[in-house]
Length: 462
Image (cartoon, rainbow, N blue to C red; front, side):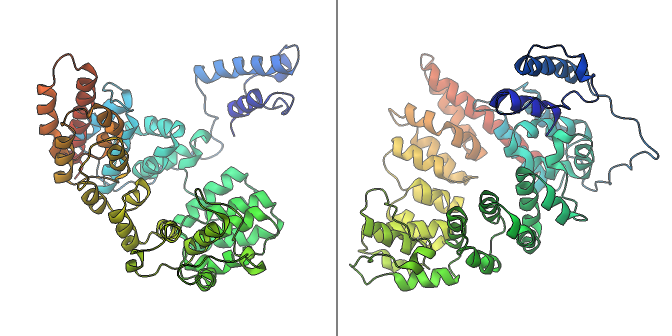
């Protein structure tokens, strides 16, 4: 945490709960030079001094001995001048898109990474600064920035998130880092070597507090596989309920686990509801938690079915509502595509559509005949990018009377997912929209601008 972050945290929680950082002005001015009446005034005075120092610029320390080695070479070719111009327009906000430029910036970054290219070095600092305040962009920025971005990040602690984990002293770093740093480090390791990440957790497990243990179990969601099952099974006996609940939530996603087999054995005969859970069922996470709209025994059934392996999709026919609810939970947790499609075709919901591939989800939504608020919700749930034919159909459907509300609700999703093939239809719709329909014209103009930029990105980075 930087000096500025320490001061900010103290100001937010109050000096009664957190002392003024003694080293907040280290290397800036002598703390004794700050004359203030009380801790609150000291925080404000220190913030004023440090704020002026930050605005004035930061002078790097002199090199000790040999200069730092240069960044590793980046073999990827630089993206085209046009692609760079589009990125700089988005970063400098010389072009503004309704809903935020970050949406198209993220798409530019993903397209650049997929094309195996890199942005010019002159925009790396701006990208690192943007991703520092917009965490959703960090992964994409770290990827396209490559070794030069990592080199820069190693010289500014505010960009530490972009520094690849050092595997040399990984165990020591993990054991001594803060909770936030450990979570980030564990997630980074799990993305490339899930077994090594699990080994880090197991090495320090015995000495961790309950809240930390629960957080570490949650972090194992990255790269989760059946190889994690033995460890998660053992944590079902943890003394802390939060840890047991976290382990059960991950085991819900592993249909081949021992717990899933035990849950399958607990599913009662058709038309029956389970009885009071015994100690073994309680250990597996069956709780007296009522599902919305269901009684306690039906809620037990939903929990059991939601953690058990899924039967063939033909079982959905004539099934009770609580069984369908449990199967829906299981399909979402296990990402079972056959079941998700069957459920969405029977009754499309935002949750099931969002878990399907774009071509499958859009195929189901295209069959909806009524363009209303529910349609907007289903549209917003469809993952992208959308196919060209579906994008054209959506633009045509929204031109029916009384759909301005749907257009407004779906704007963000359409700006992100519409295929550029829908651009001619949008421009024609905008031309035919009367001048007095200002809100609709503004929305259509924003969509057309977003699609024009996305089309350019697609052309330049493919």
